[in-house]
Amino acid sequence: MTEPDQLEAERTIRELRAAGRLAEAVRLIGRLGPYGRADGPDATTSLGAAVLEEYGDQLAGTDPDAADAAYRDAAADQGAFAGGATSGGEGLARIAEAERIDAKRRR
Image (cartoon, rainbow, N blue to C red; front, side, top):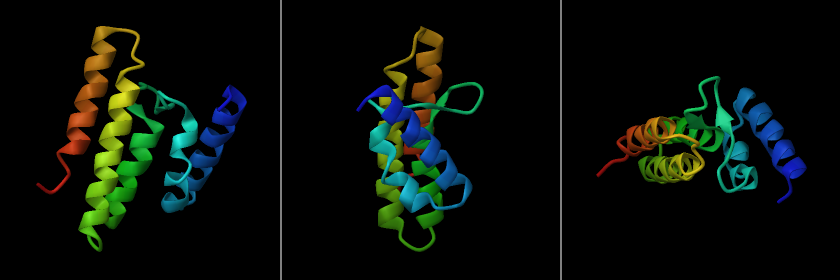
């Protein structure tokens, strides 16, 4: 996927998320590229992980298995995002976010 395609996917995901259309946003996360895009000003969490986590939170009360899958995918997306870190501290902060998200899964 080219950079313009990734930017378009990011814009669309952010719009869908803002509109509360998380299921639709989740389907586009794979288009963000191998390391994803940052969510928020500190760039600690990936956009994909943030959307998947929110989706898991939304599903947790009605479909725990689907919520677990969303949390698993969010943690994996966050782990990939950590791989794109440019410093050790940044990478550690991103990995900590992946662990925090993964801890939401039922064991």
